[in-house]
Amino acid sequence: MNTKVAIKDRLKMLGIKPSLQRMAIMECLLEHPVHPTVDMIFNQLSPTIPTLSKTTVYNTLKLLSEERAIHTVNIDEKNVRYDGDILPHAHFKCKSCGKIMDVHFQGLEALKIKQLHGLQIDECQLLYKGYCQTCQHEIKQTTNN
Image (tube, rainbow, N blue to C red; front, side, top):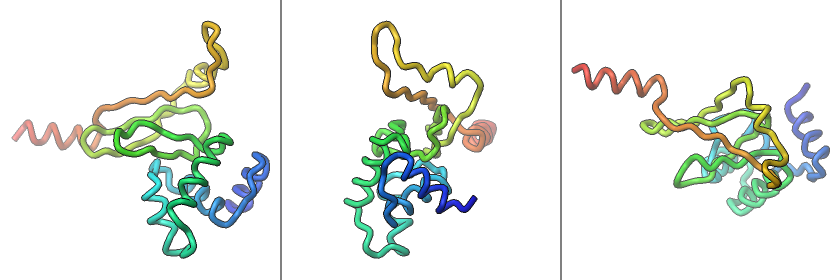
């Protein structure tokens, strides 16, 4: 299925009017799973959408997040990151290079609970921090020299 059609259908299903900017932002999140910041999204899309403003990016991400079309990821101390993958998964941030990546494993579906000890659960984020394989290798090389 055409990505643009799938995005348009996904937004319509959630009751979101599929404007050019909204579809472009959603496509950016789905096709470039680097968990971008507002600035990263704006810088990537503004050359092809000259009418795009940072305010539009902020407002669109807020709307998409509120309607559960995307996830906000609060793993970066400086910036909110955004993720178009709404299936259950965790996130990992490398403490050396800063790369943020998805972590998929069995059992995460069990964390999708609605209530816990009388509390209403609307959101759950599982975040890991450590060192990616590349940085582990570089650290090992540095310490062995």
